[in-house]
Image 1 (tube, one colour):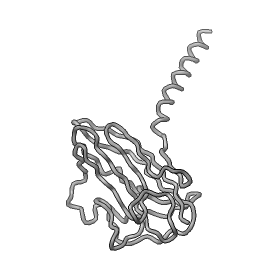
Image 2: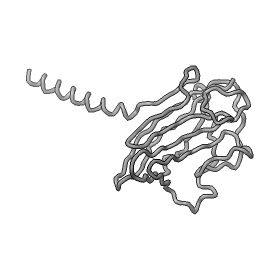
Image 3: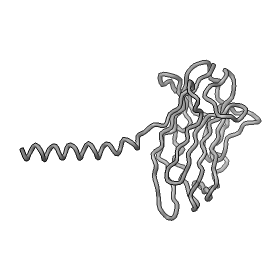
Image 4: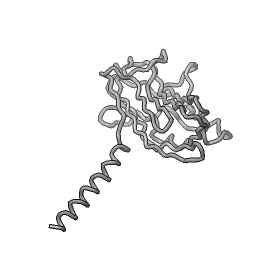
Length: 193
């Protein structure tokens, strides 16, 4: 009987311990058939906002065929201290677009730090300030990516269909001499009509 209680207690402890990790894997997701067009999530003094912007700069999840759109991630520092963000959160899949059923359509940017190679590889965000990371799907005279993204060529127009884009990365930052790592997993489902 004691063995049964002992092993039951261990099993319960393991279940509780692994259950805490599930929250780290939570996906924040939006769909084109719903009202919500912005993913907004607050973690340790940073407000993350991920959205797609239409040609008028408004958040949207439904676009007309041929219409340009912009990927937009903003980081709002709501702490009383400056934050230093490591830019390695911009991984090879950052802003990658997939057609329904996982067909890879590519990323909008062609590189990071292209003409900014002399700039620091960390981004400072002062208290109460916001940093934008915007990057259009198609490069035009009126739409350019924000630092540190660069584009040397434009992407092909997406045809009618269902698509999605994902940000899944470890976000590392330092504030008050403490380092934090947050696992973020955002997914926007969108439609081209």
